[in-house]
Length: 229
Image 1 (cartoon, one colour):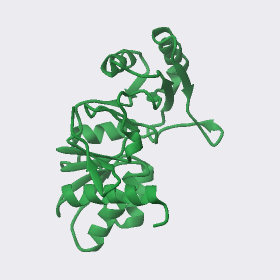
Image 2 (cartoon, helix red, strand yellow; image 1 turned 90 degrees about the horizontal axis):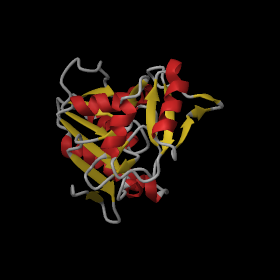
Image 3 (spheres, one colour; image 1 turned 180 degrees about the vertical axis):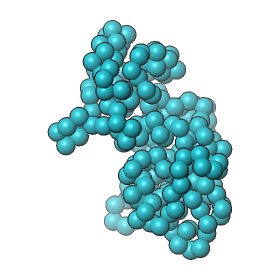
Image 4 (cartoon, one colour; image 1 turned 90 degrees about the vertical axis):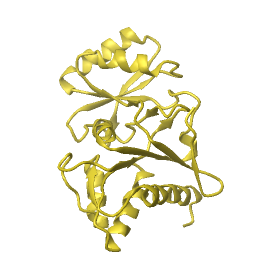
């Protein structure tokens, strides 16, 4: 592989599957450029004869599963043994920013439901404090203007932008809008999460706490594993 960054992501995605997935398991598969490699490796394991099933976080991930031959089953049609997904940021306490790909609600549902949740990232996503990446907020479209006003009132210095894709307002697989909220450094992400979730019309917030069981990341030599602070 000519791109060193993609080669490193491949190592991490493959390692997560090979370390944590066993034959017969139901695997939650995430969305994004690093999760892609976990999906591909799961497909290779299925092609080699292992019985595996997947619950997916997005239509894009389901499409990849079909491409790679991974059987997809509905959410909670059986217990999820392990979920593997990327993140936009990982803090030292393993709190996460997720939702850059727009699948934050389903990603959180699968992470919560899984017996183990394994996070896979490239090392550029490891931060001292959340907030470098804008916080995605999934919003019921009818309430979008209200939610924007409330966020502006609660966080006067934040820059909040409705996500647009291909020149049109972006809609999640759930039919909702995404607001990307640039708060700057977030010293109290749990407090920010609580304030945002209290706003009527907010479905979910791309801040994840107390869910990860391990964090694997790219490293100069092989695959690194973050130690929780």
